[in-house]
Length: 130
Image (cartoon, rainbow, N blue to C red; front, side, top):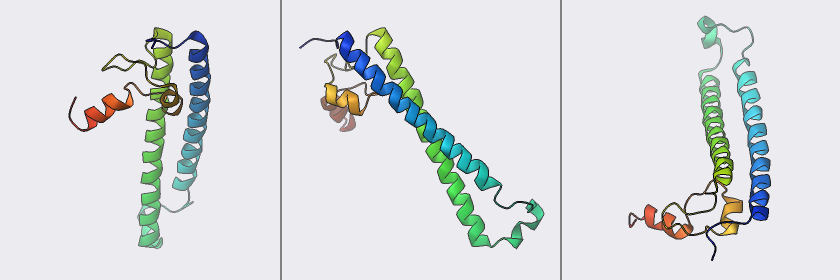
């Protein structure tokens, strides 16, 4: 089995990654818009008059905003990992397991383009056997 993907397959991966990056970018923008409009929900309410809003509602709003920030950070990290995957394509190390140097199956690379380990090595790592 070869230790590298063909140029045609790398182009296929590159296209798929760029599509995923576009989706991630759109998702980040949507979340940002939601955070922006969510923080202005109270309109003219000042911090001094926050108690005019029901405490449970304020707690729910706070929780939703926290959740949105977490989702935005997660999506942002995913975007960065996809960017690194594109760099690995340019370097020639895309799809090669960092542990065993074997070729990671195409199906895995299409589903998880930021993968750096084959399933077997990843499982060994998770179980503490690596």
